[in-house]
Image 1 (cartoon, rainbow, N blue to C red):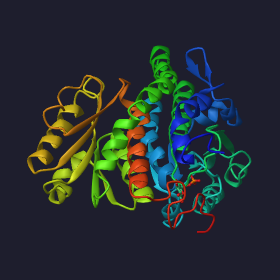
Image 2 (spheres, rainbow, N blue to C red):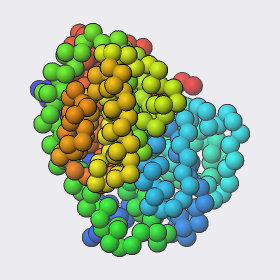
Image 3 (cartoon, helix red, strand yellow):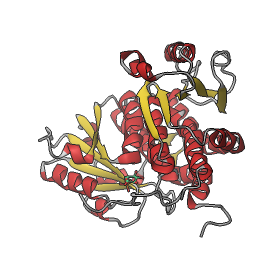
Length: 369
Ligand code: BG6
């Protein structure tokens, strides 16, 4: 039931504040994160982990890439992110102090299921982050952290993505508490950031009409580039994936620092480029670097659409359009910045007269290898 919305995707995009709130529920005790499901491992096991490998496909892999920054920063454990179908075919080094985290909305993706089985046979412990109660991947894992985003029907993932990042951040904060790598004050600060996210996503959703207008102006665009840095990098790739999936437009996401090493050759007059701009407060070092990337591409004629924090005036002279997101800690910006990109892809699909919920050639869960 679309509940009055024009598509399941529109409904699911709008449900994102609830998806995050539901994923947080019951996992915050006072000012600290306690994920009850992680009791499946003793604290000694979590404290003894030497390495984390995140495995997933598609949008779920971008949630993993985003969380990699947060988990390493908070819990001081090395984290790598791998596509499930690459992981198990390259003879990876796994031992019993390796923790594997699988991410899958459906819990049925065959590539990820096979990677989970492979990891357990090799001696790793496996936690799954999953949105579907009782699915196959959770049943094959040592512990499961459900995302509680509610059923996701549209093929292109939206609310499951923000819920996955939320669940992984909860995991990271739980791990940091057990390992003693964050002070109580630091832990409390991150908890405050997380609990503020639902209302901030609701604020971003208020820009929907503006983004829709932009998408309708751009309906005959042939290629779109996305730039981001730090946690904005996986968001740039997710923005590009959404556009491929929904609007069948050639789209690429790049790390902004990589621009000068190749992608800048693609810039020609009129080329639309979305730039996820880090906060000037939260990322004082990276913000000016990304602003100078914007200057470089603008000088070559790019049409720049900046996703930038409210009050960031540095982008104004160089951006053709600015979509504002509320202030948040640097690691929490992805949960806000992804929303305009989802809406843009959805609206461009609508502008082209395409099926938003059922894009061609794609399936919601891919149960073959
Ligand atoms: C793809 C879906 O086939 O599978 C994507 O089209 C999804 O939307 C990916 O991100 C992974 O799916 P899941 O269920 O494992 O998260």
